[in-house]
Image (tube, rainbow over all chains, first blue to last red; front, side, top):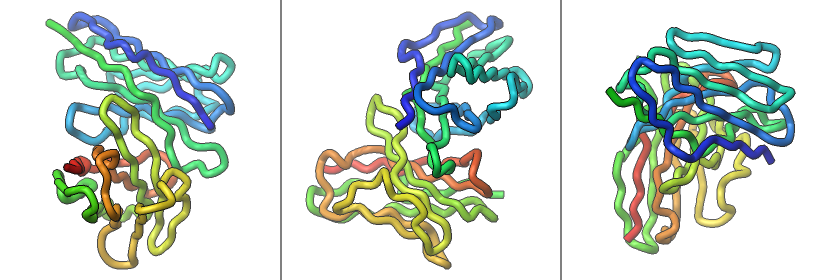
Length: 113
Length: 112
């Protein structure tokens, strides 16, 4: 089964800086990779999906890269704001049955003034 | 368009009782997924359903757990004879296709 590694340590950055979160996976290369945001006591919120043939994808202040050779995705938040503080989850579809998602444990981001 | 709705938001059950968790997917979404999140752990897939069909239940314990998504009404996750280890947050997600998923607010189950 797919194993996903995200930095379990919280990432603390100053407002206005760029936050970079890492997602590494083992085993098979998925057809796509997704990033979600989760706030305490709430369900995850879908942010971005990047396909295996896409190197980079952007949405407003968010940027995701996908390197299938390194088996790694990087998630960037530029001009970070305190409201960006949350846990960010990387998710990959299962092999064969593409629908079920395997989630990483997430990286908690704290943006301070 | 209302989001995914789950109820109840909080559920307390004594050991041995039954827990019923409900999920109404977003309008137009025919794919429903259930996930469980234990404290300090990641989301774990339990089951994937489409209307009246269980597509993948590989993440669901074989005993005491069942799920359904009837032709009419919400999807139900049912846990019989609950034990303390069942205490967790249970999230439902829906999807119009097979890619991005939209999650509900979750049901927090506490077994005393």
